[in-house]
Amino acid sequence: MATISYLTRIEFGEGQVGRLPEFLAALNVKRPLIATDKGLVASGLAGKVAGLLKDAPAIFDGTPANPTEAAVQEALAVYRREGCDGIIGLGGGSALDLAKGVRLLTGHEGPLSQYTLVAGGLSRIHGRICPMIAVPTTAGTGSEVGRAAVIITAEGRKLGIISPYMLPSIALCDPELTYGLPAGLTAATGMDAISHCLETFMASAFNPPADSIAMDGLMRGWRSLEAAVRDGSDKAARNDMMMCALEGAMAFQKGLGAVHALTHPLGAIRSLNLHHGTLNAILMPAVLRFNRPVIGGKWGELARFFGSAPDEAITRLNRSIGIPSGLKALGVTPDMMGQVSEEALKDHCHATNPRLATAADYLQILEEAA
Image (cartoon, rainbow, N blue to C red; front, side, top):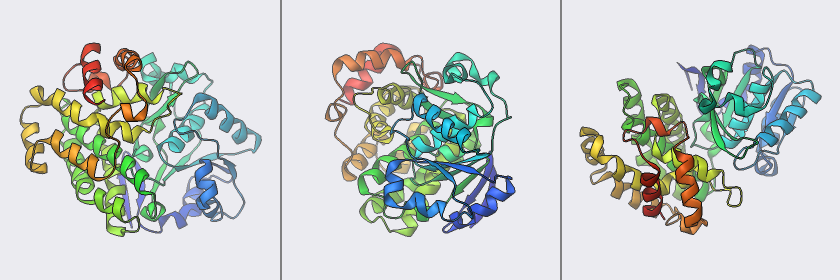
């Protein structure tokens, strides 16, 4: 096990979920709400975690694949009705982000749109909110150490709510919770983590510590993702992937880029309900090519790391782990691409891409990834 203090308190190691009652007591939480999804309830994992507690917690299992403001409000109603005083986010990035949204509204009035970064919400968020423990069950988003909750607002836009106050009180990272994760979900979430490491490394802000953390995460993900996809019980690979996800999110405090500027509006297309990590994987090669003219020596560093051109290396990895061939295979149509290109310009990740894109540039990236 390890206790790490970087951005927030992180408890990392196999079996650490068993210490959940200890961590709740440290935060003085007596009646937590577990925010999770129906899949984890059906698998028995949510019940296993709930069973660790002396008293049965309140449970909200209505987290959608891409969390919505409506679902946040539903969970908040359970929180208030059950007299809760803290929240446990249990699941992948969707459940963790939904939990963050509920937590925000324990101390702020809605709607959520006023707290999004693009609406100037950073200054409106304060720390008078309930405690939260984030318990990831996938190795991808790193939301357990992220300052952001990415939520589809009532207006239908998928936007980031970002503040240091959004960081969970404790990130409880137990790789055992990812053992047996299906191969397809392992692949998609793993590519999400790898995309965070790559985009952070390319981002133009001067932050050598973040670059170093991103490269360590990339090394772990690169060496272990295929093994984790092949064998869901490979303990070393699962440990590496959870740390890759953690480090990717530690590092992306520096900023992300065009991949995420595009995947956020793509994920807001309700008729498709696309997986964020899958989108990141498909878009990454085209964004690498787009950024190459401006990232200087970093392209060479990545080429030495991969042993080939970075875009080609990611394309091969996508193929080997079963990522769909392109956006068309997911149902994305040309008319959708035009709208997404315009929405990407408004995303908070647009400004931190090393090469500033136009709507036409974004459209070209989408067409390359089709």
